[in-house]
Amino acid sequence: MNKKIVVVTGLSGAGKSTALKIFEDMGYEAVDNLPCSLIPLILNEKIKSDIAIGIDIRSRDFDAKKINKFILKIKEKLAISVVFFECENIKLIERFKVSRRRHPMSLNIPINDIIEQERLWLKPLKNIADFQLDTTNLEVPELNKTLLSIFSKLNDQKFNLRIMSFGFKYGIPREADIVMDVRFLENPYYNKNLRIQNGKDNDVIKFVKSQSCFDKFHKNFLNTIKHLFNFYKIEGKKYLTIAFGCTGGVHRSVVVAETIFDSLASSKLGLYIDHRDIEK
Image (cartoon, rainbow, N blue to C red):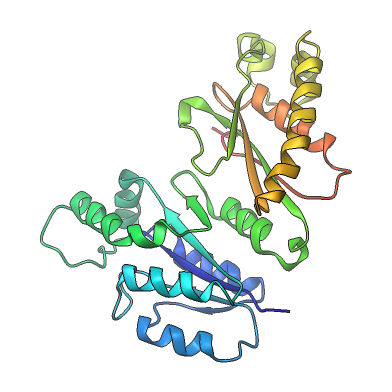
């Protein structure tokens, strides 16, 4: 069985170093900031364990176009995946301030312009990424679950599904493949007794599920998505994120996400669930 190779790349401050530690915990050999000229030497050897290689603008001899061509060439004979880490500029700048670290690109221009220049240089790698992860609103525990759901050895033969809830007021999750707006459901927020509760509390669950449209929506959505799984598999996709959104991500979307998750629990899927905004 071929050993897995994961190339971890993307914007500075977007979470690559954290991701490499997670891969290490999964049993991968993790190598960061490797000179690009050494990558062919490592991959041409007989790889004895799964390996995660961090590549970014800090790497010596970095040339995204050359790396792009090399990866596309070796993909024909090696099990290699590219994970590209993305993040909004304002969040990256905030992270640099908190950590008191400078951006690794030593350019005498404003930080926002530096990040845009880095995006431009990394574009050839982003274009061939098998997975693009936006960490703007992704905390470390959620990143850990996401990478586990994609790359864990236990999930190699499964179709992996991540179900999440979110609030539109905090932005649509960029990692979502399918976004379902559940604001057609009556909002428990306007009931003063339910406002302080969330979608995991029985009173809120009962309020949402008792609405006349809920059962019909649940049945139709479940039927549709089960058929779509087969089409995704045919196209070679093994990982899917479905995000259910309501206004604040606390009540309706949580109930719907939990219900869909429970309905699929008996299926042969790698299932994961997250409630991004439930504590906000």
